[in-house]
Amino acid sequence: PGHGVSTVVGEVPSMEFLARCVADAMSALGIERYSVVGHSMGGYVALAMCEAYGDRLDSITLLSSTTMPDSEEKCDRRRREIELIKAGKKNTMARLVPHAGFAPHNARRFADYIADLEELILITEDEGVIAILGGMIERKDRDELLRNTPIPHMLIFGRHDYYISNEVAEELAAKHPEAEVVWLEESGHMGFLEEPERCAEVLLGFVKGN
Image (cartoon, rainbow, N blue to C red; front, side, top):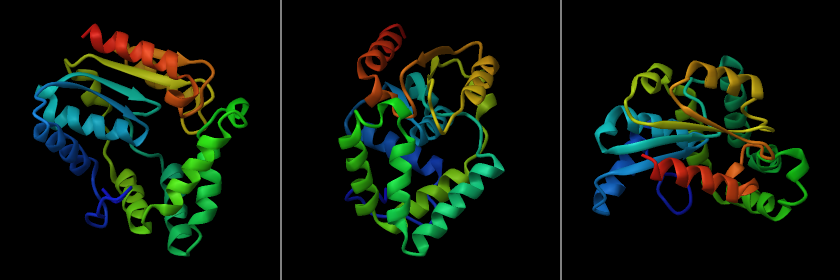
């Protein structure tokens, strides 16, 4: 909600609200059980779905995402992004954010994708971007939830992820020995674009195995 051609709903859509949107969409499609793969913020939504709709899920995959709430440093960065948008400088954000999503050695190869992402940021309603940033700031810690869920889960990390460092990813993997862990060695934050075949291979293998 608030992105693409959808309507902005409230000032700060919670991860719980977004999870309900996904669950309602699946119900409307008549799909009763499914696996959830959440990329980045989508991982936060997947965790909220695990909490509220776990009886519908066959498996959960967090792709370039984490279970923990934002650090104070990351909250401050999101607040600065909100202030940029409010000041009418979303174009600055559009120039910086897409580039940071890719491993440095992939930037030239994915120049067209990066340009498309810049355009997506620019055409998204300011209120929608601000609302989502606020929702991520306010999300809660679901690390213990994932550790204790009986639902099979997998963590996929990019070795060159600017947003989730190797140190943070390795710490998360160590805290979740029950999870299947996969590293995309040539990817940054956008592994499904940077290594699509490898990403699809591990996702389909995991989903079919559960």
